[in-house]
Amino acid sequence: MELNNSNDLENKREENNIVQNFINDLKEFINKQESKLNNIEPMKKDTSLIEELQSQGKITAMYRDKINVERVKILQNIANRNENKDTMYFVYHKNKEDGTYNLSACEQDKSHEVITVDEKKLPSNIGVGSVLRKDNNGYVLDKNLTKEVQYDIQNMVNKLLEEQKKYLEQNRIEGHIYSFNGKTDNSIWLVDETKYGQINNKSIFEEIEFPKDILKSAKYGDLYQYRNGKYYILEK
Image (tube, rainbow, N blue to C red; front, side, top):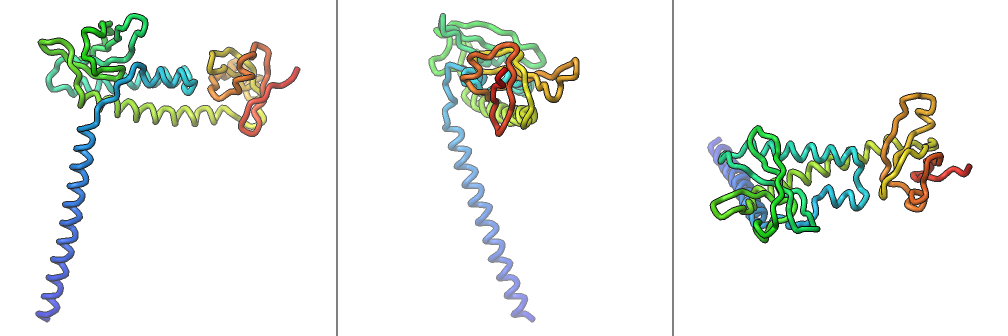
């Protein structure tokens, strides 16, 4: 009996050692990851993520507006958690014509006032997406807050792009006929005539994955059919 108890105790000690070693290894891994994160420099960019998506034709107007709304919410949440209660400034646009930046002033429970500042009055290491504060010497870059904001915005954009993908897939229906209702350089507005042709209040959506050769000459009166994952123009 005593031998069994001794064996049980020894087994428990080994198990405890294994668990403790695992916990120590996990802590070491987490510390290393946090150290890496702290050493990462925030991205310095001349264009916003939204502007990049627009120029690449990867975002509809509806989801561009959604991203803008959610970005304001992210900034307001961070401003509301600001223990110093000072004003933070989010750089959201660079005016390349005159070298100025548009900043959104973020304060607790206040609307975001937009100000324009010459780049000569700003730190050299800032870019679109940076978060700034003010001290006695002027504007300074808050690296940690910049990284936090950029991370939150990137995650939000990824989720909304996935939502946009599902929304567009729901509107692309095999065999359906669509009519032209307007266009931009990178997108076309379509009406699903098969589904809504007999309804006065027709449903219109913006399509961003449309053949460029057809888009170039698209005009009112044109009809298209969606087949096998592509749009084809219907000859009159």
